[in-house]
Length: 269
Image (tube, rainbow, N blue to C red; front, side, top):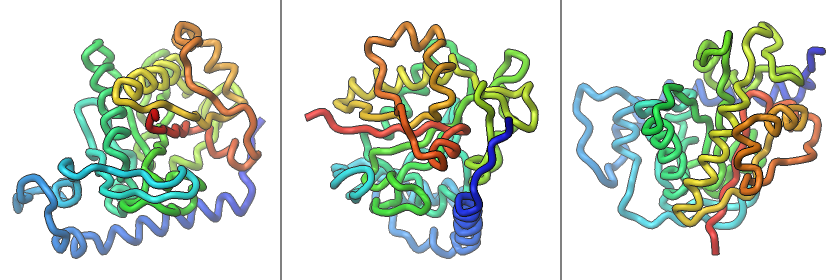
């Protein structure tokens, strides 16, 4: 049965899309005025994204997450690379609008996860979604993502038993994709969530986080899809050490977490 988002949710996310898209038209002027904190001066041939990254990433100052994921801020956040050999940020406008900043250890956890997959011979390419604002704080329309300790990860998809990337380039509109309770895309049920890879991704992030002194405190996951996740071989293998998966969510929040899952981190005391 097709699920329908209520109108306020649709309006909120369409507003987000229009907002960050309109912001991108002003970015050429903004980017060139930002002072370089570390790293080389961007070349004249560098793309807008490359220039933005070189002008904003920093690795010399200590990152500090203040408060909680739902009420906090971020100091000296690091900008996640827009892309790597096997991953890419999901939306250029979101990236250039300053929504891909995070705690340095979270950035390293995500990057190390993808690096481990690559070293293990995994051929899949991954898409990462929104992190936090440069200085944290409220980031419409998210309720969390405030202290650099949250990240949205796009659900890896498959079609005919092979990785499928045909829906990965929708930008902010990706948040509005709908999947049924079996994890099938409602507009083409031949396309479905690759739950084995989702389980592998969550558990590998958990492993990489602990190496850096972090722990995953919560994974927000559509409750209708929990059984499919828990039935995978990868999840059962790591079950004893797997992070907490949400059991109950408000209907609107639940509906909006079928195309992606959300991860909250915390520094181990």
